[in-house]
Length: 202
Image 1 (cartoon, helix red, strand yellow):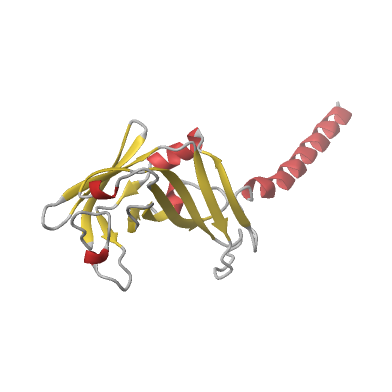
Image 2 (spheres, helix red, strand yellow):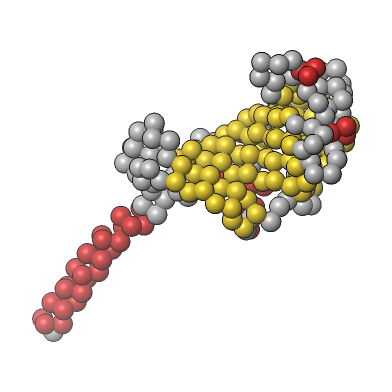
Protein backbone atom coordinates (compact mmCIF):
# COMPACT_ATOMS: atom_id res chain seq x y z
CA UNK A 1 0.00 0.00 0.00
CA UNK A 2 2.85 2.37 0.91
CA UNK A 3 4.51 1.72 -2.45
CA UNK A 4 1.22 2.42 -4.22
CA UNK A 5 0.90 5.76 -2.41
CA UNK A 6 4.47 6.68 -3.35
CA UNK A 7 3.76 5.83 -6.97
CA UNK A 8 0.65 8.00 -6.89
CA UNK A 9 2.58 10.93 -5.43
CA UNK A 10 5.28 10.61 -8.08
CA UNK A 11 2.61 10.59 -10.81
CA UNK A 12 0.93 13.67 -9.35
CA UNK A 13 4.26 15.50 -9.19
CA UNK A 14 4.99 14.63 -12.81
CA UNK A 15 1.60 15.96 -13.87
CA UNK A 16 2.24 19.23 -12.02
CA UNK A 17 5.56 19.61 -13.83
CA UNK A 18 3.90 19.01 -17.20
CA UNK A 19 1.13 21.51 -16.45
CA UNK A 20 3.67 24.08 -15.33
CA UNK A 21 5.70 23.60 -18.48
CA UNK A 22 2.64 23.87 -20.70
CA UNK A 23 1.22 27.01 -19.08
CA UNK A 24 3.65 29.48 -20.70
CA UNK A 25 2.86 27.98 -24.10
CA UNK A 26 -0.86 28.47 -23.55
CA UNK A 27 -0.29 31.95 -22.12
CA UNK A 28 1.82 32.96 -25.13
CA UNK A 29 -0.42 31.64 -27.89
CA UNK A 30 -1.25 35.29 -28.61
CA UNK A 31 2.19 36.74 -27.81
CA UNK A 32 4.07 38.81 -30.37
CA UNK A 33 7.77 39.16 -31.16
CA UNK A 34 10.02 42.04 -32.12
CA UNK A 35 10.09 42.43 -35.89
CA UNK A 36 6.98 40.28 -36.40
CA UNK A 37 5.29 40.73 -39.76
CA UNK A 38 2.29 39.05 -41.37
CA UNK A 39 1.13 40.19 -44.80
CA UNK A 40 -1.25 37.86 -46.63
CA UNK A 41 -4.55 37.46 -48.42
CA UNK A 42 -6.58 34.74 -46.75
CA UNK A 43 -10.07 33.27 -46.88
CA UNK A 44 -12.76 35.30 -45.17
CA UNK A 45 -13.79 32.40 -42.95
CA UNK A 46 -16.62 32.32 -40.42
CA UNK A 47 -14.39 33.46 -37.56
CA UNK A 48 -13.20 36.57 -39.37
CA UNK A 49 -16.72 37.30 -40.65
CA UNK A 50 -18.02 37.17 -37.09
CA UNK A 51 -15.40 39.65 -35.88
CA UNK A 52 -16.06 42.04 -38.78
CA UNK A 53 -19.83 41.86 -38.45
CA UNK A 54 -19.61 42.63 -34.72
CA UNK A 55 -17.85 45.96 -35.33
CA UNK A 56 -19.73 49.11 -34.38
CA UNK A 57 -19.15 52.27 -36.39
CA UNK A 58 -19.35 55.72 -34.84
CA UNK A 59 -21.89 58.13 -36.28
CA UNK A 60 -19.50 60.47 -38.11
CA UNK A 61 -17.52 60.22 -41.35
CA UNK A 62 -15.00 62.62 -42.89
CA UNK A 63 -14.11 63.11 -46.56
CA UNK A 64 -10.35 63.29 -47.09
CA UNK A 65 -9.28 66.36 -49.05
CA UNK A 66 -5.63 66.83 -48.06
CA UNK A 67 -4.49 70.26 -49.21
CA UNK A 68 -7.32 70.51 -51.75
CA UNK A 69 -10.92 71.68 -51.51
CA UNK A 70 -14.07 69.63 -51.11
CA UNK A 71 -15.32 70.97 -54.44
CA UNK A 72 -12.41 69.26 -56.20
CA UNK A 73 -13.60 65.75 -55.28
CA UNK A 74 -14.91 63.86 -58.31
CA UNK A 75 -17.49 61.10 -58.20
CA UNK A 76 -19.75 62.67 -55.54
CA UNK A 77 -22.59 64.88 -56.73
CA UNK A 78 -22.43 67.27 -53.76
CA UNK A 79 -19.25 66.49 -51.81
CA UNK A 80 -19.15 67.50 -48.15
CA UNK A 81 -16.32 67.59 -45.66
CA UNK A 82 -18.29 65.64 -43.06
CA UNK A 83 -21.31 63.35 -42.84
CA UNK A 84 -23.63 61.71 -40.39
CA UNK A 85 -23.03 58.04 -40.96
CA UNK A 86 -24.48 54.59 -40.32
CA UNK A 87 -23.32 51.10 -41.31
CA UNK A 88 -25.43 47.97 -41.44
CA UNK A 89 -25.07 44.46 -42.85
CA UNK A 90 -27.95 43.52 -45.15
CA UNK A 91 -27.61 39.90 -46.24
CA UNK A 92 -24.11 39.73 -47.77
CA UNK A 93 -23.60 43.48 -48.18
CA UNK A 94 -22.33 46.16 -45.84
CA UNK A 95 -24.43 49.25 -46.58
CA UNK A 96 -22.80 52.54 -45.57
CA UNK A 97 -25.27 55.44 -45.48
CA UNK A 98 -24.26 59.11 -45.42
CA UNK A 99 -26.09 62.41 -44.85
CA UNK A 100 -24.45 65.83 -45.07
CA UNK A 101 -25.46 68.92 -43.08
CA UNK A 102 -27.67 70.20 -45.90
CA UNK A 103 -29.65 66.94 -46.07
CA UNK A 104 -28.10 65.37 -49.17
CA UNK A 105 -27.90 61.60 -48.79
CA UNK A 106 -26.22 58.66 -50.43
CA UNK A 107 -25.13 55.10 -49.77
CA UNK A 108 -22.18 52.92 -50.71
CA UNK A 109 -22.47 49.14 -50.58
CA UNK A 110 -19.66 46.64 -50.18
CA UNK A 111 -20.48 43.05 -51.12
CA UNK A 112 -18.85 40.57 -48.76
CA UNK A 113 -15.76 39.25 -50.60
CA UNK A 114 -14.37 35.73 -50.32
CA UNK A 115 -10.98 36.94 -49.08
CA UNK A 116 -9.51 39.52 -46.71
CA UNK A 117 -6.09 41.15 -46.98
CA UNK A 118 -4.25 41.04 -43.66
CA UNK A 119 -1.42 43.38 -42.68
CA UNK A 120 -0.01 42.94 -39.16
CA UNK A 121 3.42 44.34 -38.34
CA UNK A 122 5.57 45.37 -35.40
CA UNK A 123 6.19 49.11 -35.99
CA UNK A 124 9.08 48.92 -33.51
CA UNK A 125 7.98 52.07 -31.72
CA UNK A 126 5.87 50.46 -28.97
CA UNK A 127 7.02 49.02 -25.63
CA UNK A 128 7.05 45.32 -24.84
CA UNK A 129 4.89 44.91 -21.74
CA UNK A 130 5.80 41.28 -21.20
CA UNK A 131 3.96 39.58 -24.05
CA UNK A 132 5.64 41.30 -26.99
CA UNK A 133 5.00 44.60 -28.78
CA UNK A 134 1.56 45.65 -29.99
CA UNK A 135 1.21 45.05 -33.72
CA UNK A 136 -0.22 47.66 -36.08
CA UNK A 137 -3.07 45.97 -37.97
CA UNK A 138 -5.10 46.43 -41.13
CA UNK A 139 -7.78 44.16 -42.55
CA UNK A 140 -8.91 45.11 -46.06
CA UNK A 141 -12.12 44.05 -47.81
CA UNK A 142 -12.42 44.89 -51.51
CA UNK A 143 -15.34 44.43 -53.92
CA UNK A 144 -16.88 46.10 -57.00
CA UNK A 145 -18.40 49.42 -55.95
CA UNK A 146 -22.13 49.99 -55.71
CA UNK A 147 -23.76 53.23 -54.68
CA UNK A 148 -26.76 55.51 -54.81
CA UNK A 149 -27.77 59.08 -54.11
CA UNK A 150 -24.89 61.56 -54.11
CA UNK A 151 -22.43 58.72 -54.83
CA UNK A 152 -24.20 57.54 -57.99
CA UNK A 153 -22.07 59.69 -60.39
CA UNK A 154 -18.95 57.74 -59.38
CA UNK A 155 -20.37 54.26 -59.94
CA UNK A 156 -19.14 52.61 -63.14
CA UNK A 157 -17.43 49.42 -64.35
CA UNK A 158 -13.99 48.80 -62.83
CA UNK A 159 -14.77 50.94 -59.78
CA UNK A 160 -13.58 49.21 -56.60
CA UNK A 161 -14.57 49.92 -53.01
CA UNK A 162 -12.18 48.95 -50.21
CA UNK A 163 -12.98 49.00 -46.51
CA UNK A 164 -9.83 49.17 -44.37
CA UNK A 165 -10.11 48.33 -40.67
CA UNK A 166 -7.23 49.77 -38.64
CA UNK A 167 -6.02 49.10 -35.13
CA UNK A 168 -3.48 47.37 -32.92
CA UNK A 169 -3.16 44.28 -30.75
CA UNK A 170 -1.50 40.92 -30.23
CA UNK A 171 -1.33 37.87 -32.49
CA UNK A 172 -4.95 36.89 -31.77
CA UNK A 173 -7.04 39.43 -33.67
CA UNK A 174 -10.55 40.31 -32.52
CA UNK A 175 -13.02 43.08 -33.28
CA UNK A 176 -11.83 44.96 -30.19
CA UNK A 177 -8.42 45.47 -31.81
CA UNK A 178 -9.84 47.80 -34.47
CA UNK A 179 -10.36 51.48 -33.66
CA UNK A 180 -10.63 53.24 -37.05
CA UNK A 181 -11.93 52.65 -40.56
CA UNK A 182 -11.08 54.02 -44.00
CA UNK A 183 -13.20 53.61 -47.12
CA UNK A 184 -11.41 54.01 -50.45
CA UNK A 185 -13.15 54.42 -53.81
CA UNK A 186 -10.84 53.75 -56.77
CA UNK A 187 -11.37 53.55 -60.50
CA UNK A 188 -11.52 55.43 -63.80
CA UNK A 189 -14.51 57.57 -62.79
CA UNK A 190 -14.04 58.34 -59.09
CA UNK A 191 -11.24 58.36 -56.54
CA UNK A 192 -11.91 59.51 -53.00
CA UNK A 193 -11.45 58.45 -49.39
CA UNK A 194 -13.78 58.60 -46.39
CA UNK A 195 -12.72 57.78 -42.86
CA UNK A 196 -13.98 57.58 -39.29
CA UNK A 197 -13.84 55.84 -35.94
CA UNK A 198 -15.03 52.52 -34.61
CA UNK A 199 -16.61 52.11 -31.19
CA UNK A 200 -14.25 50.00 -29.08
CA UNK A 201 -14.24 48.61 -25.56
CA UNK A 202 -10.47 49.04 -25.09
